[in-house]
Length: 173
Image (cartoon, rainbow, N blue to C red; front, top):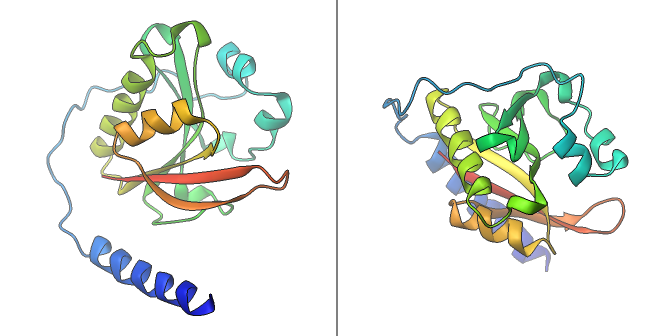
C-alpha cells in the first residue's frame, strides 16, 4: 500500500512540474467582467438559503474573497485567492478557490450554474490565474456533474471532521 502511495506522489510531482513549465496564456478573453460586489460583510440571502450558519462560518477567509453573482442573481459564489488560504490543497499561489457556490433551488438545471462557472473561468483567465479549485460533497451528484461538464477533474478525496466524504476538484486554465 505504501508503495502505491509513493508512486502516486512521484507521478503527481512529475505532472506538476510539467504543468508549471507550460507556456503562459497571453490571450485575453473578455476584459469587461465585473465582480459585482467586493464587500462580504453581509452574505447574500441565497447563501443563507443554501448553507447552514455552521457551514458559512466555517470558512475563515471571506475578507479576502470576492462575491460573484450569476444571471439575475440566481446563482452566487465566493472567489478567494489561493495565496490567502492554508487549509486546502495548494496547486499554486496563483489560483482561485471557489467557495459557497450555490444556485437558487427554483432555478437549478436551467443554465444558471453553468453560466456562473463560465463567468468565473473567464474572470480567472483574464486575471491570468493558473487554476480554479473547489470542494464538493461526494454525494452531491448534481454539483459534481456540473463541475465535470465544465472541465473540472478530481484532485483529492477525503473525509472532513464530520466524517463526510469531500472531493477537491480542479480546473487548470
